[in-house]
View 1 (tube, rainbow, N blue to C red):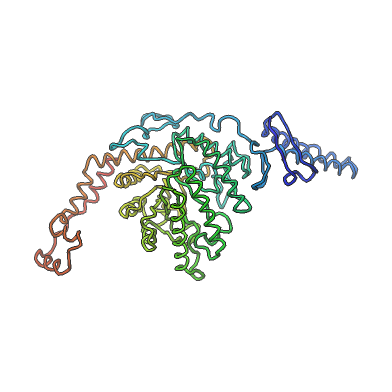
View 2 (view 1 turned 90 degrees about the horizontal axis):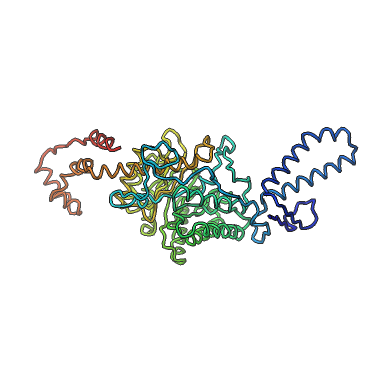
Length: 530
């Protein structure tokens, strides 16, 4: 038996005291029943009653209709405001049974399988280059795209209403989504997930209310994840609420700066509590729309002070995870301050933070910056900053962040070459910061997309291993630079090749012979591997 209890603050206006509605049926059934009754009354009875009733009877009828409507709301899933002292029943709207009853646990069946709900290339326990595939990949599911994505866009309404959604942003709905998340992880065979604070719990009217909401959902997440699952990373959502219209750490308003710090502080705490391995800073609104009204130097200094405070708090609470900055050139701002990997690296060096942070490279953001994902990964890697990869891809023909699942095996192979050269990503990994297309609306599509993304990267790993074991591509590259494998070359690379010495050598050697770059051969070798 279920019960919904309303205190005076949440009771429908037509009810003058606290009400307890106890029923033996599932609330979702009652909710649908009352809505059906209300609709039929409106469609069938309304016109007839209006014609024959006198004024008094009409008023009585309207009151009855209002009562039916209020009872329907009372019996439906909880939509009460998010408040610390709320007495809204926390067991209201519980989902019964499985969220994905028609989806089996995803297994490896090999390349010949025609089962779209199976892995063709990702075999978690198989060893590649002396390491299990699951340890190379360290896959993670993004809560926001997977469980908060609606398919809506600036030109159209949402297209996805998953069976477990009730259309509210209540705590009960947040808990329901969290349960769906862990069922999804278990069936997919993934032991990591990522989140923004406001994705998993509703925003409150105050910081205290928001924190209380977050604590309640995080307590459930802690229970559900057990000892085998934990966050790859967590972060704070500092871009959606109107208070962040000018940014968070770069806002010209001191109050917003302080609010941002409070929100990040709490998000770091819950990430640590859940066993998160990293914490991410994505500054979606840390930038500008025009320099005419912007003090760029002051904003960058403020952002640096904010990052310093985050480092200090990380150490204070004993969080041993990695702090990550996620570069992106623009969107939603015209120009974001951490434009790309090189810009972010320069920021960290300038402010003495280079040893405190690494980078979370998102492939679609590389596209927006005019780079390949491989370029951004190599830039991060050679600077000792490659910490995590947001596994998605973009469309070079589209000027915005499409967040598509990576399906290009060639791109995945280049990505994995960088990962192998980096010695892996741990404690980072591959987070699927990718969303279903607006037109993909079946529940199974959530699984199909992740299976395909995991298989694409796994195939990329296999191809990269082939290239490394074959050695032809590495040998081609080595030969291009073999002139520097000499005594003079070694002096130059050691910083001892001054201009006087080099001028003498240039005169001694005469006109240099320039070798072919063999680009087509390099491309042939690469294509043969994929």
